[in-house]
Length: 283
Image 1 (cartoon, rainbow, N blue to C red):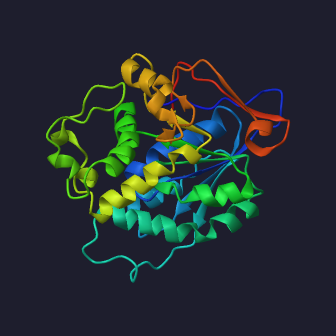
Image 2 (cartoon, rainbow, N blue to C red):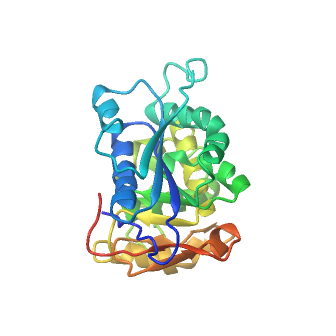
């Protein structure tokens, strides 16, 4: 499980926005992170909810009366995607189009809430990068899956360019030799990347290709759980080569500290937060 952000006690509390792609499995980890930022560390948090035809459980979750006063849920306007999503589309395609269309208002929403100091997203909310680049808002990607999946996904971007377009990832004759990591059997690949020509795979690789735009990646793991993969993604030249991909800083629940300044993120000199990876975790 990933680790909370600790806000500096000597400076004004950061204003953080958090957004998740639709679905309870995506919303819950980001919501718990957002709540911990507000309750444990005093940050001013805006949780941006992509409005869909939600379940009763999700509606109840996002309308809780127990949220702290410095935590607010903001519902983005619901969008009509009925003419944009083919009826036979799979979940990744549907989700990505919903997020893409819902984020057409993201710039105005971020400005309306006072231009937060940072935005935290999940993998499938990558459409936010371009908007935040325009507004000079640093974006952190919270990855709730394993580091093994992240390292594989980053390597698939190169593999997709190198192998013949007629060959599917799932039909490769040998396990995929991810740089610095244990080889991955093709039968263990995600359904979304088995067929490269599918819309699912195209959307997945698009989201992965945007990870280098992040100011950092918060990982749902710790050092002793995935030591080889973490070492590889931090030190292997593949992950830090402009010819392949430049991976942003990686943070796990046991990192001792990470200081971020507005000079680094927004061109200002005032420290806005300290990220400390300690013993407790919100997820």
